[in-house]
Image (cartoon, rainbow, N blue to C red; front, top):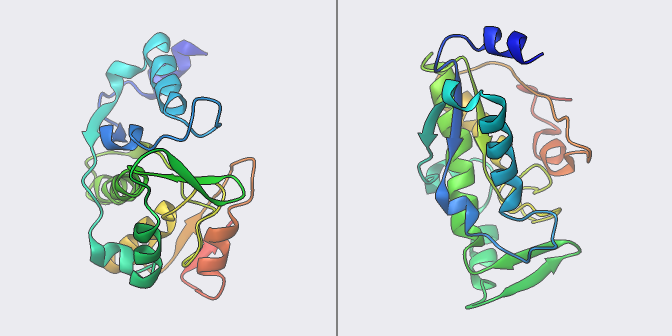
Length: 195
């Protein structure tokens, strides 16, 4: 299996690993399933497998306000900003906690998704993996949910449509939980197929 994977990834740089150290700053507590160890464990597994050196490591920029506005209203973002605690974290939804660094981390996570689109569309990478947190697919246009604040995939999809004039985009969500926020955002948008 390892030999086959190495052969598939034989050309260095075909896959981009898009990350931001800022994404590790969002912290609830060590017992919460969405904690910094999630990204660190993925990196450790790639290093152990011998695949790490084949990846392009690309640091993500912060998402712009214009890119965010294609999905999230300014009032929603202001509402989240108004709840940022000076220390610790606060519960804003059943399993969703906002810490002092959460929104900054979420802005870089969305920036990573946009950078991944740019790398693939400009053929600088064949594909990309965004090693980011917090995740995004449960966030709707105006509500945080399921550990998610900014819907990264929705922001990246709208960037692909606006920047590259794509007529159709498919989103394949293969997480254990249904990306309900992503579905709600694109429910009536014929340019996007959500699976």
